[in-house]
Length: 266
Image: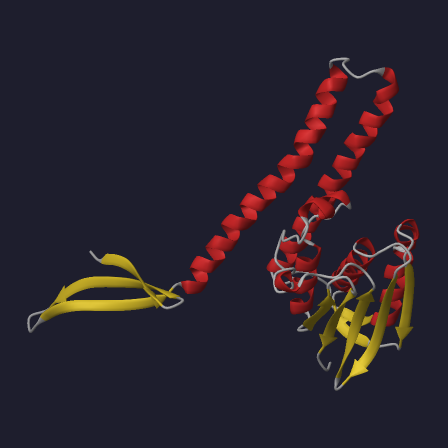
């Protein structure tokens, strides 16, 4: 038999175990302290993540269910059917994006187990990403630029693609009509880096330390209006960590944001 309790010492949480013992010579109490701080933090993160996922999934599902019910009961005028169908398609696309982002994060949380590592040339990767975002940028009236040099890192191509895609997609979404997004691949010290700079709305200083958290949004209404899931920068953070890369964010409210991912020497 033993007694278990928890002690809080500063910012650490310790599990305390007490168990009596005795032998022919003497008796006493065995005391064991175990640091469970990280375990508690992970549990809180899991609870928060589940709560956020439930909320984010419920919103589009409620909309889809409502639109579909009205249509099934014949309560939608014929001239409104196309509009309602478009709304359902939009919410389904949002739901699909959210599920895909959650799956990506889940794989990254597992440390990239089972992923294929190879030599990835970053300049051509960035070229491919920007080509895939050309139409999005054109609709937003944002100009895309790529410069730099060919640099190769050992990594997971799909994860690196997702990382750069999310950085550039955000730079377009939170930009201004007539703005620009500049991507640069270059050497730095013994490693290399990718810099994504935009001329957009910037990030308020008091939010900059939290934008890489899951589901964290500076402006929730604006993010939902442009289709953000709140997981893009979290995927960037985990993708960088998987490759041993460091992230630096520089942003001035109203004047744009630059995010730099620096890869160590290969």
